[in-house]
Image 1 (cartoon, protein in one colour):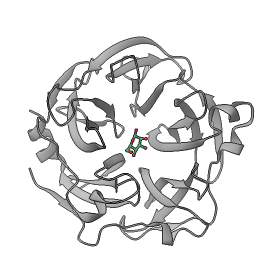
Image 2 (cartoon, helix red, strand yellow; image 1 turned 135 degrees about the vertical axis):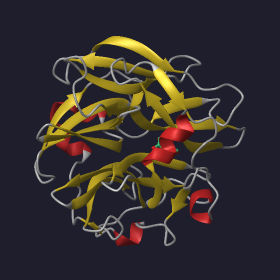
Image 3 (cartoon, helix red, strand yellow; image 1 turned 120 degrees about the horizontal axis):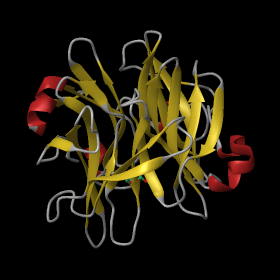
Length: 300
Ligand code: BMA
């Protein structure tokens, strides 16, 4: 399968952020009114993250907003669940609203927080939609059989599997179902998690996921893809065996956390190309492109 890194990667680094940060990485991605929007995680020098928007007209050259769009302090009564930072937003367009699902990190351990915006200027925070420990939540962009669905990754003792659940209103969740476990003894043997919100194709829901192999001194994060049944989305109907993107370039190998490729946003284009916004080594933002049809073929 042909996946192409943008030649001038990384496309965004800390020196392009107009306020003091240690790093900018792990962006959610969406198109809004002909603009490419990245909802990026910016780690402040103190070591806690906020979310900040970067905007672009061509999907390659981005300008970062002067201020964060969401900070732990914005969370009111829920602040204590986000006090150590907010991380890794996934953005899903449902109807006329963009929903953000992100990690709230605190002494209570990671949990999932839901917020929404209609214009990427004003945001409304709904609050936690899981207990800890849970992260990597992606929403499906439309109702399936009359209900909203999400994928997440609860952490149970010794298990890091992908699960899903449904909701009538995006706030109250139930109908929990197991989706997929790591393929043991492979690149994803230790844990997996949903990366990007599922894209509807005639062959199924196409979703990127990440897999981790842990070693004594480090872990290696790689990216894979899977296909879920359109009507019964807890059924995995296809999956890449090999990773589609593995740390290889210096900007993926060396950084705050070495050997990490992590993606939580991608944008499908009308010409069939998928723009994958990903981060190298928890330090920067990069771009890779692939044909959606190639990705689907690789899942089968
Ligand atoms: C995961 C998340 C990501 C991070 C990755 C690699 O658990 O915390 O934010 O990119 O680890 O360090």
